[in-house]
Every structure is written in C-alpha cells, then in structure tokens.
Image (cartoon, rainbow over all chains, first blue to last red; front, top):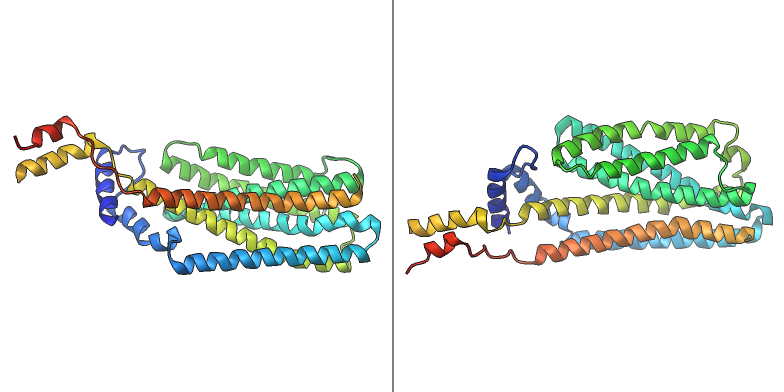
Length: 274
Length: 55
C-alpha cells in the first residue's frame, strides 16, 4: 500500500500544475504514517470510539430521564423551559466549534499544514449542525413561550447570522484549487468567529434576552448543567470523527493510482531495459 | 400543540440532528474503508504496452 502511494505521488507530482495539491513524498509519507490512527482500523481506535459513543448515549439517556422526572416537580408553565436546558449547551458548544475553526485557521496560516485545514472544516461542519439545532430549539421555545416563531431580537438575529456565516464557509469548500481553498477558508474561519462574541453578548447582556426572561433556578439549573456533559462529549466526538474522515479521504486521494497514459510508458521503458 | 408537545419536539429536533450527523459520519467512514480495501486497478492496456511485449 505504501509503495503504491509513493508511486502515485511521484507520478502525480510530475504532472501536477501549480494548483494541484502537493503530493511529494514527505506529504504522502506523513499521511501514510498516521494511517493506523486515521483509519480507525486499529483495535484501540474502535474500542475508544465504542466507549465514547456508549458514554454519550448513556449521558443523553440519563439527562432525558432527569428531565422527565423534573416535569413532575415544575409547574405547567415551566415545561417548555426544559428545552432551554438543551438549547444553552448546544449554543455553547457551537461557540466551541467556532473557536476550534478559528484556532485551526490561524494555525493553518502559520504553518500551512493540511491537518489544520481538515480540523477547521470538521469544526465548521459541526458548528453548522449545532447551530441548526440551536435555531430549531430556539424557534420552538419562542413559539411556546412568547407566542411567535421569530421576533428578530438581537439574539435571534446574531444567531441566524452565525449560522449563515458557517454555511458560507462550507460553500467556500467548493473552490477547486486545494491550496487556495484552504487559505481562503482559514481566513474566513477567523473572520466568521467574530460573530460568536456578538451572539454571546446579545444573549447575556441585552435586556430582551432569554436569560433575562427565564429564571433558570432550582431544578432547571441542575438539568442545564447535566446536559452540558453529554452535549460537550457529542461535540468533541463529532469533530474528531469528521477530522479523521477528512484525513482518510485525503489519504485515499493520495493513494489512488493514476490511469494508463501516465504510468504505462514507464513500465514499457522498464520492460525494454530488461 | 400544547406546551409538552413543543418540549418534546424541541428535544427531538436538537438531538435528532446530532444523531443524523453522527450516522452520516459513520456511513462516510464505512464508505472510505470499503474504498481503501479495494486493490489498485492494473495499468491500462495501451499501445505502449502492446509494443513492449515480446514477439
């Protein structure tokens, strides 16, 4: 496998233009060297993933049971505030994913390693998923608590902008040149993170905010802290899984053998030399 | 819908999205594993190959 990877890299680097990804021997060797870790073929990786998923499922189940148990204790008008116990950890972890994309962008601009590019993409994709969940749970809470789906409060507006910003990040991945794509996304990931403090401040400092309208006291506060554990673990697991998938896809592209017109003359020359 | 329905839908939407994305990632890993386990295709039979064969 390693031999075929090196052969493919040599051939491709000889025909690749300036926009082609660099597949010199050092790059491919680095990808191959992390293959056992990136492919998850090893027993330790699979075992760790299985344990992680099991703990996440148990955490979510425990939090749901606690939520259901608390429905007996809180009054009928407080039921819907249980959604905020999931909404707030999701929003916080959206910020975390955005911060990971921010750091990965800076690190990519620093050393131009494809690892940081892959990490930034993984974090941005998870941020989009989390932000979508935040918007959906927020919509349902707003509809039930205030009687309207969307009221264009600063908090809602900045959250929507954050979602759109990371959607644009994913659209930028359509740039064909890999080097340009990675650089543009790194810069954009740094810029997109600037909206995160605005969302946080609009939720906590502005008068018409959810935290001001809802008193997260007593059992609700406890549930809120309990939900932080499984949601954070799920976020970390998703980012790591997406990062590993990106590394494996990169390895697969580097290891794909070229077609006949490029490799065959070399083989023919070897046959004649014999 | 009553208040409890909104609560249940809120949890289902939030957790359902995470589960769907996790499943998509799992399918992605599986697809890449299958592609990596496929042996490399032999080189194409071109004119250069034909000319290099012993006669």
